[in-house]
Length: 310
Ligand code: CP
Ligand code: NVA
Image (cartoon, rainbow, N blue to C red; front, side, top):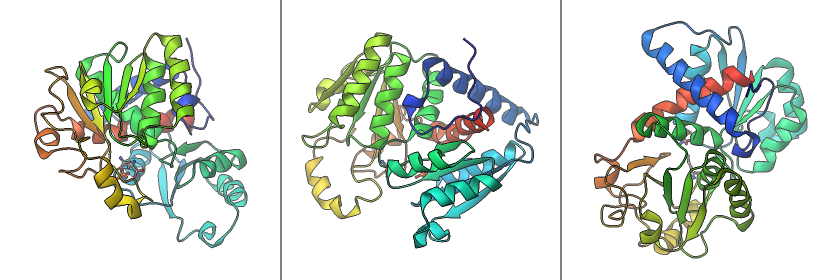
């Protein structure tokens, strides 16, 4: 099916159809090849991307900035501390004005509503570079990595161990849309939100996959092709760090807890990681781990998104 992403926002994995996810992944693989062989691919020559950051970033900032450059365009880093938005200018005015200058906006924000409002008032595409609810760019890079290592998505089992956070939500939606079985193991009180799970389950039913949420790491790990974890305290939750360290005891991805996973499982982590907390060094630095391929794919997957929407 022909799909057209031009002019579209990417705020949630649920903004994409299965076909559109595969179109992005195909484009990402193609752009990766071009980058490796040195073939010029100035698909966004002369275009500018504004990159709004309310929070810190290593991967998202550098991969978007180099990505737009490699596509022949230009990226502007816009810290919310320097923008008038940090002094109370409404998001609506900021979006209306910025979209008179720019060809695309990428935003990393605290509240999901901020990217929704940016998209509402912007006349150029808005890409969610992480908010409290989702991290779609991360999941597209993760799926590119899984495709490279496992040659497919459909029918695989992805096990997510840890906090039911933004990354977990996007994984739930992404897996459901691509027919991957997903099992989430979280401690009591830290499971993904009920409405997120319900949406993912409804979607999974259409594509013949399953969504499971459990408090048992052992149950979730059983038969996993892909094991994923993320930090126990996300950006903005620093004050809960000590409380969470206690709550997540036993929810570490380590060799013992992953005994039930397939022998050739791959380990993913969006990074930054805390060795000794959500993951042991033996796993993240061991033979199952593909975290640096995954991080690299942020560049290729986001170039694909930019090229298709801008
Ligand atoms: N995974 C990720 O988004 O990393 P950064 O916070 O460094 O951008
Ligand atoms: N869940 C983490 C992801 C960081 C890329 C956070 O929001 O801080």
